[in-house]
Image (cartoon, rainbow, N blue to C red; front, side, top):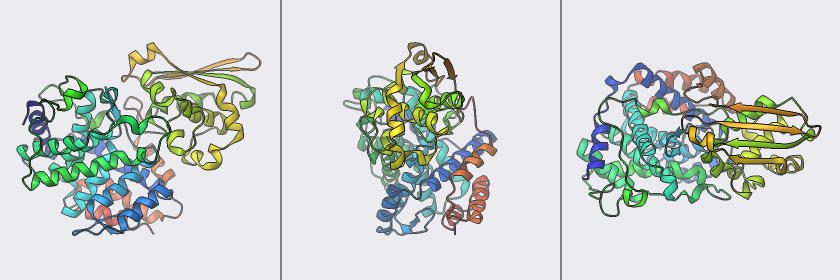
Length: 450
């Protein structure tokens, strides 16, 4: 096992619930709550139904259940279906560093494994923290998107780390799990380029289920590549040299992940915030130009491709700064329903989008990832100029959502067809997850929404 793998395995395997601060435990509960809310909000969409149907045709012993239906499946198929619902609306959490991604992509896969093992709530919390740690350390160490590698690669590594805790693996086995996960799941960044597809929402959860399976293989004694990071043709051969964080006590990475207020790629959150501050100051038809200045990562993902001015599906539209800003100016808000077919084909919005220009600012790029900064300047037909600027969007760790605001987000995502009793039960069990003897008790609530 190479030095880099061994070092991460040691970091992961030595994490203990009893060593976590109250803040870490509470923030982990908040990430779990946010993920379940995002999944509930995505329940009605066709892709969610398709993934639930696929999971329903698989049978496992012991079974894992599909959230909100209770259908029994294998742990990997249930985790994939539930994880796709978590990810679909693009409302789930984000990490911003040299690389960016959505660590909550791993939560559903870990819950499925915890359910089948009947692990207790404290062990699930530890697994989630471990998963976020591995995911975050990889994002901190290397800008893997610049090497054509997708964020879902980190989900495979992180899920293997989390699953290693649920399976009670030792340091050596954990290292093998990490190696098995990374060796088979270096995924292509092409998934988030050009006109986007269904795979945008599935890639991370799919990698997470593969990471869980890697840990299961390691638990059976299987070994992975001996030098997956440092060796000949290891990851560093693709990305160039990097090192993980310094040894010793450090701030756990779950504390530096950001929640979302709006259903859009995180790089568009500050643009939506800035646009919201300008709504009501002028009618859309009176606007002549909208100039948007943002940081380079946001520009490359959300404003540097012609498809972003003419999105044909939800997946492309929620990765389009012109579309989401234009929607805010046209409707005064940005909601999950603003990506439906009627909205995508709105003649008024299509006429408005050519007024929008997106630029990369060297000054803002230099501040990223410390700041996710965006400035919008609007000029009207009469020459009136208004400017709005957001330094950190709502939900960023420096501009956090309160627990009350997070529950309000959950409430807003809860389908009208689901009962309030089911919602109350889920909230209670998540806030008290560390007292549960079995994660099955939480999943019982997730499957009893009527």
